Image 1 (tube, rainbow, N blue to C red):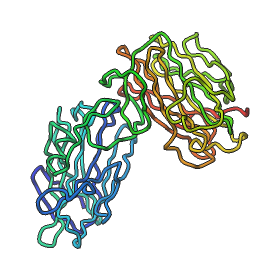
Image 2 (image 1 turned 30 degrees about the vertical axis):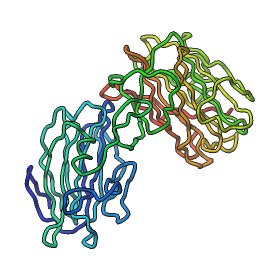
Image 3 (image 1 turned 45 degrees about the vertical axis):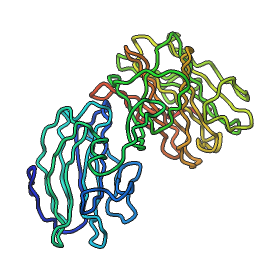
Image 4 (image 1 turned 45 degrees about the horizontal axis):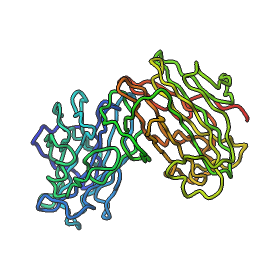
Length: 409
């Protein structure tokens, strides 16, 4: 059975547990997050555990569970499973959506529906513009029944406003890099849009997974080095996405149907192997490595024909273990004008059968060079290269395991 609930309306749900799905058009220029606030009778959270989101996916009483968003056919689906336990002192779950890049929800066509015991309740959506936060719905208890309310209330202040509304103290301290005022949460960044608005940074920057993309000065030459503990044998190559939609692979070894190419028009060049060294510069997460490390470098001279460069670390199955966690893989991006960006593989799985890692993406824009930490990994036992693809919004996607299989090395 399917029913509709307009803004301000409420209905009784057949059970105390169910799922709420929120969908919208995918947009990599925006950072959209689903959060559930667990509230007592006063309408406030009891403590920080009352906030369920990507960095805290469930509460101790299992009243709400965050499910990672899924993108399919240009639509992103967010999900929260709920179970309003009558034995708990939580009286209400507020389901919210925030846009954390400061752009807002204009044109996203947000929809929401509640699935509960075979019934579907569609929350008739409203259009939003520059609002940065929205309370979509409330699931609450009333007279022994579990009910749902369609809210659709917008907040100009986004996540900070929602947190304050529900009694969570917001950290006004500015993060080291990038500069932004948020709570303590951080989210993995999978893609980056060239239209994203960022403040340029300089100096030594830790851009480990979970931080937002940053923009640095575009200089005549940028060097990317990927280093690792010398107890294994990795190889480095780069995928170059051109403005004409072509992908060029810069690699010292071939793949099925792809020849060896060390240099692309002197714009992207592999500088060859450099093994068993103690380099002058190390990524931040290599400081603890006591023995020698290996390093390979890519030289980049960005021009108007290059849209993005994606460095890749790879270890063939024939080399044995491919654990990015174990061997301290780290990428260092140097613009040779005082800025060094370090991205590590510290979040890597300890699975020894993962052979490809994409630490981050370098995107060429008229305003500077955007660096995004991806830390994307291949499927276990896969030796296929990633594939680059442009999204409908002009952003570049990294599709793991979609490219040709690397030749035996």
